[in-house]
Image (cartoon, rainbow, N blue to C red; front, top):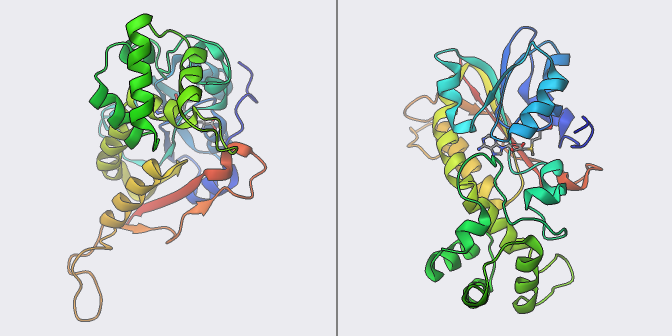
Length: 296
Ligand SMILES: C[S@@+](CC[C@H](N)C(=O)[O-])C[C@H]1O[C@@H](n2cnc3c(N)ncnc32)[C@H](O)[C@@H]1O
């Protein structure tokens, strides 16, 4: 995999919010093809990189060289990997990368024929096909509705269950065709977009991973250190926004002068999310970038 296969989203803004200092330790929890991490190194930061995808990790290792400390792991394990060290910044650039989406063999894309896999880490856990061939109707409807925000979740679930009576579901194209048969096309996105998103989030426990990371990562920061998160849809951005507000005491009781009764340990670096709307990279269009800083 060459190093330009994934174009890093909001690269300049992200590095600006991370505020890299020479010799500081920066954790990239979603290393991908190492685009953000390479820029951290270029600015003099030391990188501890994490990715659950062994292919991404191998590509990043080539790009970053031996100075980077790399781990094949989920980002919820960062506190354990830091083993008591505090860091100057943590970056999470959520979701999947372009190379993951573009390789038919990974099973993330409804546009190409491939095995229905969708695991970011193909060495662990259950593939989308295995899950879809055993899941009950109520759970399937719930996943498609909550994680895919698919209005026609019930209809799609019934279609999948009816197909299962006849044959095992194996490929991305089969699933995309089943969905296209029962979800009306709206002309903007492929009818299977939401269903694929919902299943991917469930297979990789993306919501649970983000919750665990948001609870644990702020305590890994040294004073002045920043946690920076790039999200791509409301299921990601909402918990990030809420967790950051809570950390900064935004919703805590205030005294007569409007000051929080308990002094917060963190501050929002900026009140509003930076958006990727103007970025020439089409993946960046829905991106939201937020940062929180540990106070001294
Ligand atoms: C959008 S890409 C990151 C791209 C990277 N910032 C760059 O510039 O090349 C997201 C990466 O995070 C990884 N990932 C997603 N969720 C993860 C998790 N919970 N733990 C570890 N890695 C994760 C994916 O495997 C993917 O390689």
